[in-house]
Image (cartoon, rainbow, N blue to C red; front, side, top):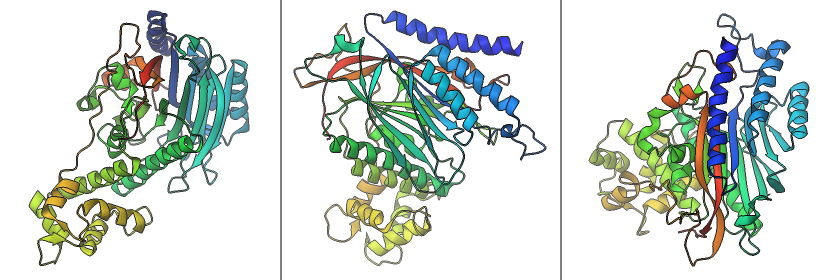
Length: 447
């Protein structure tokens, strides 16, 4: 009965994806799947003995990963991004590499630093992409997290979207952020995303790339209510799943994708899309805004009103302004500095420069309101504007290729209703698949 149920669940999702592709046959589509496959070294087999892991039983981990591969190859996504890939086991690595290679995929794996045992695997299908370049990104921070950057060019059947010598390129990132074990790690997670975006920006400048679509995949270990989500939104990224289902930021409760080791269910797996027609803030400005947002959140969590917060930052200063020393003291009291995971001195100075708008060496009440208390996040729209009936954007500006989101499905389907099915044993994460269709659109620049 359980086997039948698992098959039914995946077939429902696969049907939704294949139907989306059939419905848009006039426009070629690509699909992207992200899936945290739960490394056997982390999968507990006994509540009584927490040290008894699936990695101790070859029959268990071998069978489960064969089933994972069966479904991945059945769905045959153009892009596959896996997290918690057990790079420390040669037999499992060989199994994935052989089966994916035989099915036409080019594979890239990356272990977490300090021999943590697991890592990432990204695979792209040769029928859809030519690999231009590949880069590893090692965070070298708490949690030993890593990311992969893949630069690819679309090949036939996408030539019908080609505009002269315009190359249809994409940057794909696969990552797995740190789990927020306590509030002090929120800043670490924000740092990790900042490093990814810095790396992407540096790569684009190094290779003199015009704006091209960027797809960020992975287990972000944070929900739509978190600082990481807001930071990415401020940079123009949209959640592909929410775009497909026309969900707003207030609809965080409508879907989940993970049941964590604490038994909580939450939505943490995303495929983010940044189209080249999106106007973006400068990355450093978005970063400062994100940290100020975290700063404000901590002040409010301490039940401080606007005037109380200003007084807290002002400390013992007799004037009606905040000094740099008072600002630094407040950051330390809020646990944003003073420890190895906190802001560096240079980052603190950059924040102060942002807060001191007129550059007179102090922050008055108006500057406090504008930069700290009333800091706002950009509300990026999820839709694509000004498309004609063929999906092509009408514009006289310089053209490039972007993507529209045609569909997005989570497997098993119960998670799309905010429930976690007890009979699901493939992983402690759902897998997310998104259907994209390339469209012409105007380029944008940094705002």
